[in-house]
Amino acid sequence: MVITLWHLTPTKNVESIRENGFWDAPMNELPELKGVYFADRPFWEGMTDGIPDEWTGIVVVFELPDKELDSYQIKGATRQLYREWLIPADVVNRFERFYVASDVPPVG
Image (cartoon, rainbow, N blue to C red; front, side, top):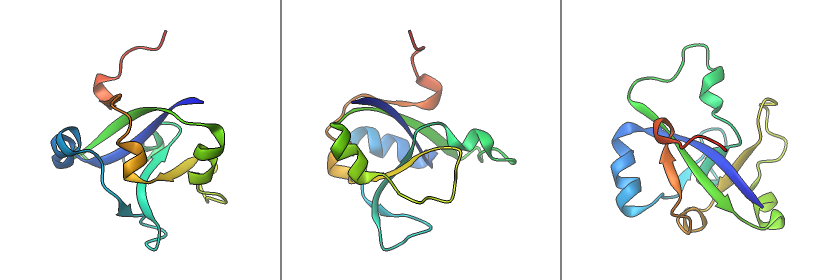
């Protein structure tokens, strides 16, 4: 399955991600879980205050078997507007196709 997923990070991390790749981090709501948080849409667009200027959206295009992708999905998440995943950094870093949200090429 090819899927585009969205990640939000402090802007200061973008250059490091480009040079060194993503790294595993604890999830805010479930600190015992580590990985790279993704959603199936730019979830920050629904935030009433928007995102602070010092944060940047990153888009990653994945091609993973459905079964593998499903194994990383956060089940029973409280947010119903989008699907969420916590994907290990070594899996994310296999994919070179990622963009800063403002650099996302048009679809089609």
